[in-house]
Length: 437
Image (cartoon, rainbow, N blue to C red):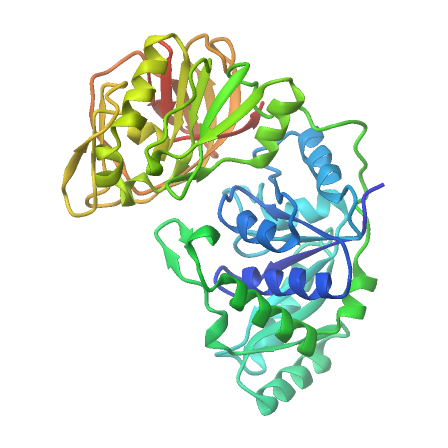
């Protein structure tokens, strides 16, 4: 049976749910609890923050991109050996794909979990109560069990918010978090700056934990938590088949966007995983039969990567020996011939795919995708279907044409055409594969 769980959701993106979640994880650990976590939706950055605090992998749960057995199995994995699970929502509580699937509301309704709603109150008075009332009534199958007002200016502001809420609703108010500049997390184009790149993260988390412990009713929060209403019948299924028996995976500040649940599935399937750092000019080990370059921020490190001959030559050597080389998003860019940075400077990359990509004149590409593989390969036979997600600002400036990696439609079912590229045993695209369909 899974442990009690609570989900931190927000009225809108930027309301402070990540900082509140980190503070909760830190404060609950100080109480001596074994705490686990999960993140709703496709996200590689927030889970790394969670893991730094809990010491445990944070799983992603995505009702659009994952099968039910994957969702429930991953939740079970996240809850193994913990006293309490804290989930962090995505965007606003009801925001997801155009039809609403993939939202935090979808997940909590499916699993029967209670929500703590975070409302950014820094520019609100009595109107905060109207926001809460709207969220309480919007979906009958979603339980908003408590409220936290964030970025509160002081005692008078807190009293105004509390009285307005009490006049309209009996929903518990867990407390108010004060406005504090020390809790702001730096951001860049794909979200928060990665945890591994923040030297002050420990101090920020300690401060957030102190404020949560001082201003929120943690006893009441623990009483509100409850186990999911669906139990797993076995371990989670493979989200992606292992692309080889010995898989070398790039891992550093430039290549960090890989789900730990995918890696865990590969290990369960008997694959051996090893890791190397392209930024430190490391090459995939000799004898590997697959190399994975995850997404990340190679566009911020293009000059350094272009000079790392051991890394680039190692990729070419692995490809010449017949290893399957697979790149997602940033990894796809590095497999091409050229990568142009924001300043318009072009750098030579591995040259294993006949493409060039550019981060100059960035334009957002974002959304869920349905993917059908165009050819047989380690990820499945031609026609295999995956749920995927796309989130990047780069674009292809050159593509010599087929063979293609996949055919793609968006979350509305509209054809987006071909995606990615494959040449021999080398393949990739801007897509992040989430789970089999």
